[in-house]
Image: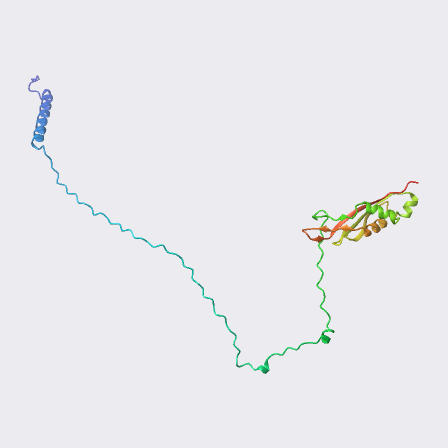
Length: 220
């Protein structure tokens, strides 16, 4: 069926839209021309300012409390005490004191013994090793049997140097060759020797020691 394009609505949409847009613009322009002035009725209320008050604070100071000294107490004699009941002290005469034995002396302080390898200041032989040789020669302490056989020997002597520097507990540790008198002669020598005592923390102490003594036979 043929339709006339002039009366077909599909072909009239564009014209209708353009006409509607033009009319809308005309209405908007007319409204703007009529109401040019806009007024706003807005009331702004001022906010009350908060008042800040500043006060001066006085500077405080700690005051030390002054202590008042107490009044001294004065002894007052009690009226109820009978003078006859007072204690009497009897004084002894010098003759009475003569028969009283004096108090015992205080116990001697035990001497401390410190090992030779730990003591701070070790004992030292007065006049050195030469004192041993001189004493053997001076007192002819070479054993007779060994001297007749022309045998030399060595004696290892053990002892403890006390706080006065005197050897104590002298004994034979070893002698070579044995049973020829080197050990006995070595003990005699060491009993006659004197040492400067050992010190530990500025205090005199006992120190165990050992001393080898060599006896050399004279060649004939």
